[in-house]
Length: 321
Image 1 (cartoon, rainbow, N blue to C red):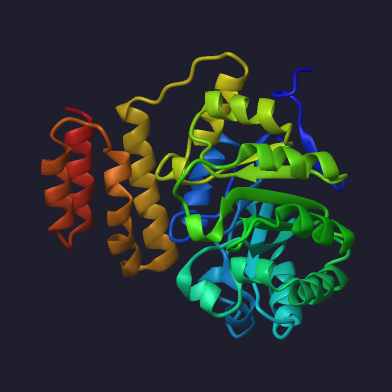
Image 2 (cartoon, rainbow, N blue to C red):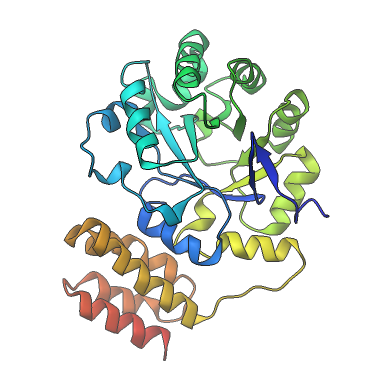
C-alpha cells in the first residue's frame, strides 16, 4: 500500500494523511458538518478555545456544542497556566471528543500577550507544568500539541523533545517563527529534523495548498500527516480533493456542488447560531465565489440585504446562470 493511501496512527486511532486544521471563525461546527459530506474518516480540529473561557461556559455554549457526525474530532485548547484545565477538559470529554490538543503556536497578539499560544515556547518551565497537568487529566485519550519553529528564536527541537518527554501522543509543527506569523516560506526541513528525533507521529501545518506541495513537503520531511489551514476556506471538499489527487485521480467541483455547499453552509449557520449566523455567512461568500466572473455584482447584493431568501436566490441565480 502506498504512503498516501495508508493511514497513520495516534495511539490506537487511525487517520488518513490529510487533516482539517484549526481556523478561528471558519472551522466551526457548521463547516465541519459540510466537510463530513466529502470526508468521512479524516481527523478534524475544532477552533482554538482558551481553557478559562470553556471552564466558565454553560453546557449549551457554542464552543462545546458539536454533532457526533463531526467525529473523529480533536478539541484544541489554549492555556497560560494550569488553572481551569480540569474543568475545561471535563466539559469537552462529556461531549465526546476523540483527542485533545494544546496550541502553543498561535501567533496572535491577544493570545501571546496573555502568555498563551506561542508565548509558551519562550517559557519552557511553565510549558512543562501545563503539559504534565493536561497529560494527567486526559490519560485515556490521545493528547496532541501544535507548535511553531519558535517564538523569536528557533527552538522547535527542544520543544519537541520536552513535549514528547511529557507523554504527548503526537505533535504538529508550523515551521515558522511567531514573528513571521503566516508570511514567508515555511522551513519544511526543520519539520524533517523534528521527525527524525521523534518516536511519535509528526504532523505539519503551514502552506499546504495542493497535493504537489504536500508531496514536496513529504520528500523534505517524511512527516506523517498534513494539517490543511487556509486552503480549507469555504472548500469543505478540500480534504477529498487532496486525497484523490494523491492517488492520481481527478477531482473537480462544479458550480452545482459549490451552490449546494453554500446553501447548506448558510442553513447550518442559521441552525447553530440563529440570526447571527446569517451575518457570519458573509465572510464565507467571497471564498465560494472566488475567481468567478462578475462575482462582485452577486456579492454586492448579498452584502447589502438582511433577507435570507434574497441571499439564497442570488446564489442560485449566479451559480446556475
